[in-house]
Image (cartoon, helix red, strand yellow):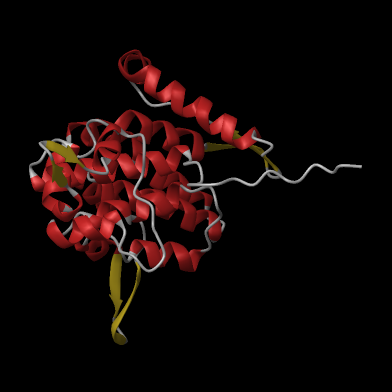
Length: 265
């Protein structure tokens, strides 16, 4: 009797909703730093040797076009530099957007307190300087300080992606140490970033999808009793208006993630 072999996937693994957002923010950063707007212009600047002119025609891979239009992400081939690394060599500082701690904290895998601190320490010094304090009896040794109002105010004033990553990492840190008070205090800062991040050049094209992920992955806690907790999703202000403008892209992303999750192959 013939047997049915397991289906083997060939090629790139499908990207998650988070993967696509990460890739899209990265390529936007590359475009901003370089001042180049098209995939062809980026390819000429970063990988000019791959562009061939033959009999009046230009032959090129067009992968940078795919990055720009969002249909492909920068993969990694063993023993070869990735597109992220190639772009970083020409336009320093751009790799940071692909390796930013925000992507780890938005991942649904659990984090312990030690990993939270590792990611917090990778944030911009304007964030870490206010989050850490030196121990008086141990010079050079720094620990996370109490999340006082002046700390929260400073992060909200920054209004940056690093500031948002900091409060979300503090939420995960609070969960790891079972501090509902710290969790609530940190998460209460989130609405402030809903006003500042859409105004940044890097995130203006992507804030709707970013906030959708934060909203569903960082739920508010309501304690019905000492032993019973309800998780509540509170969507951001102006969500309805944002979805009217960007709804097609967001809904497509949600449906694709659902299809990937239920794909039997």
